[in-house]
Amino acid sequence: MIAARVMASLTPGEHVVRLWVGMDGVKPLSATLSIRVEGEGGPEDLLGVEPKYFENFVFLLACGLAQPLSWGVMFLRSPAGDREGEAHTIRVWDLGWGALTECDAERGEMLLGQRVQGRFLDAFGVHSEDDGDEDEGEDGEAVYPPGAYTVR
Image 1: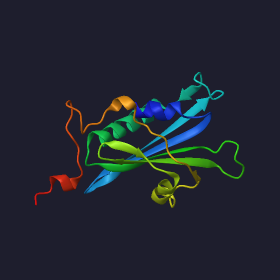
Image 2 (image 1 turned 135 degrees about the vertical axis):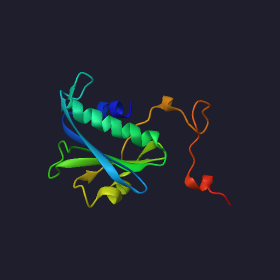
Image 3 (image 1 turned 45 degrees about the horizontal axis):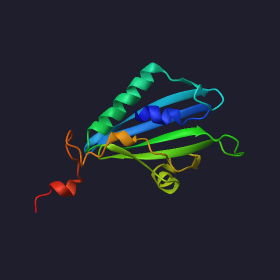
Image 4 (image 1 turned 60 degrees about the vertical axis):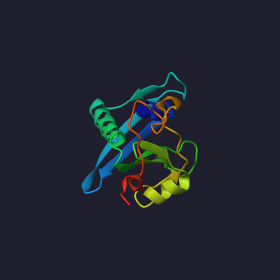
């Protein structure tokens, strides 16, 4: 659902989504997904992805979301559009505790500013209203920060 929400927000052009997922003591893994959008910016636009890269990206994202103790970052690089002198815009999400949290432009630049060039924008939410709140849910296990598990 998250990949679908990201893709539904894309304008025509070449976009790249990158994801890094890690856990303490383990080297982070990464996945890159190039997305081509052809059309006029409407619901009939055609999306193109390479299937093997899409599968790798979705698998790594699912692993990061399924393991609450993992951490990472996902960012979307998009064409700047009509803005002269800018090649790309960047949106960033922070992965932690089984969720992707949208970053504002300032936090996104703090996380990736040395690695990625472009104009940072506030990211949009990628979780649907129907995803539910696991802390209140009866179907899932509640996820709390490490301090909640510490014996005093």
